[in-house]
Image (cartoon, rainbow, N blue to C red; front, side):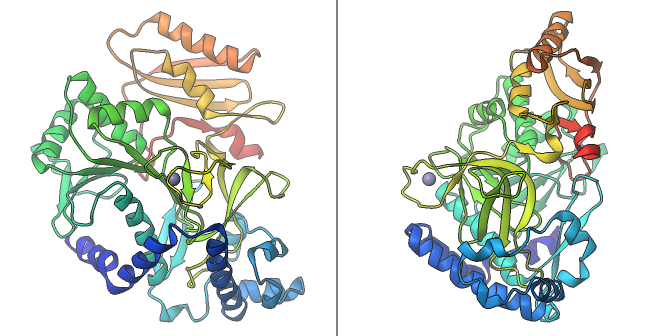
Length: 442
Ligand SMILES: [Zn+2]
């Protein structure tokens, strides 16, 4: 944790970081045209770098007879084919810039749908840029670097279970890292005591970890006063947001980002969707035929990662653009919260998708469930894991079955499993929906 602290402090408070932050402070109020000019300028640079230094792009461009000068603005980007996760895996070495050794390389990780970790090279500038984007949102919420913060995400934390210590301090950056793997009813009282004793101004968490702590507070008629809760990495549901905001007595500020570092979006103080951080990348939305659309999968082109520039990388994340103008005055486009990742979608026989939000409405009506997880084994075969609370009975079970039958309007086979707990993934994330059908067939 000490080394982590030093490294992060250098990254978060270094000279480059400060310069980028200053630019981002101004660019947040750029007009649409100014934003586009900024993007096009950086796009031309990264396209030319990709052609000259990245073997994959040199080959690709030559093959389709494309010259870097053919792409002078983002309107020309369609000329470059979409890059998939599979393309990246198969051409990993060729996607690394040959002059990348002069950059500091840092590998980002994602666990992907197959569970195989995928790595991405990142250079120092792009890491600084990412941090500055994150910090810009903290400033919107009036949180400053150096304000005490609790972090409860997938970080490795050295715990001392026999002493009921499930956290570790990062003294350098004034953060208390809580392990997200021990959040059981038995341990939560120690977690809550530790948070109160630490006296943080904010919490950075997965929606599911913040929710578990908030639910514990609710059950014990307790509250912790914070100034902001920052969530990311999992879709956030309305029922989670409501409880988190009530028991931490502050707003939730959701952030969207991904290990590939090609799209990011931040909720502003109006909390009505997320502003795409246009300075970070060129973000597009495409439908399943690969056409530009208002609703579909996010596609991103980095503007700053020269170590491994990904151009038109298609993500698994599904959303839609909201054309409303935000009251905050920023011209950055707004996307709806990403509640659907390809791997979390339930797929129907006809090839349609069922939104996780619809599934969550079934559970909303239930009073005595502390956690649930839906696993789709086949089109019509579901397993529902439920961690019941005292008071849970057959009536609740019937409600779940009825709710599912209403959604699918078909004969489906539902197997309800009452369990003591539901495991998190290797990264400490909680998956509310797992579809084995999507993985196998789409
Ligand atoms: Zn706004």
